[in-house]
Image (cartoon, rainbow, N blue to C red):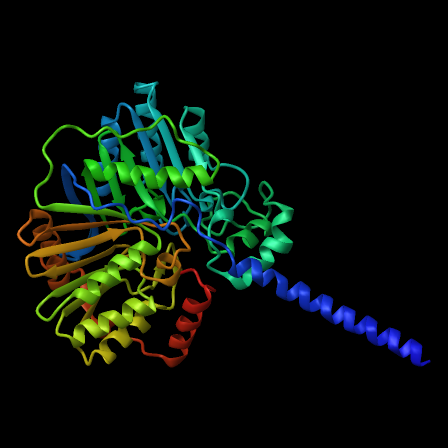
Length: 480
């Protein structure tokens, strides 16, 4: 009888140990992923030949909604001038949205047609599109535009997100251990999460989505120059407000190097593309760095920390949640640095209503802890988003601009998502600095239109929502 009890006790112990191992071991996979080779990179400080700051704005004027969009037009123009190569790395590249509620321009197809037309015009042109698997709805089949590109000799490289760090480790470990082996399938019976005109998906696609991984870059490079942007050529994003840097010269070579690294760890070696700088004049008193992943955070924090009394910081951002950046902005304001912030109210997401997390809680903290020294205004959106991601530092004789794809969140800045920003340093009287200052003052002061509103418009210091935001930011159990 005792022997039987001992046997039963051992069996229960073994079962308990087995259950613990089943639950605990996958967490090691979720917390131990490393960044792929060639990512988390800051280029050497480099020169440019040309440099432009572009922006898209949606706003009200005389009671009518105005869409002032230039970025996509300029990208298509640059594609139309390419002769040797085109390489794009774009996060959202699809035409999925709620067609019953909205009617958007065909932005994705416009860019697709431009790429195909240029490839047909120059058959020897090397053309690549690096992109995220979100555009295939986390399934095996290429979306319609990707099939068109491939049929016309343009290589589509879907980023291997399995090589990217796990921003949602509590889930990702279990996914890697138990779920991924079932594949993603090809189609299904469930509604597409990104629009009623998207392909049907299966449960395995939704399970893959929950990893919350992304190649979030928005880059375009040709033999003519490059774009680093916050804008996606995605139908549902057509009316978003965004910024972009367009440039040529030495810095393009470094951006191209960063993009080749993504293609390489995704299984495609790009050996037939090289940027040849024109022998034209170098833009005077201008230094540029390409920053990717957590090196973007390093550049931002370094500039905030070095800002002194009398300096100014202007920030326009879609998502602001990163604890270090929020803390350093408060400390900068305490030192006498003037800080102005324009935020998206986080209420609109492609036809879905959001609850204001994290921006409304971050705004409340910034204003309260700085004793009102930090000024915050909300960009007034009308179904679209203030999708801009840019910060400017005005420091005595120089202005530093950092802008591109990265939101200021743990996922975007702590080496999880793939991101690309440009850091530009120019003299205080440089036309690019003056152009950004004019742009920011325009939306801050509502010049020639209605762009922004006071903090009170969307103020929300709810303790419950603050707790949710802090938990989501810390764990990665969120979409921001």
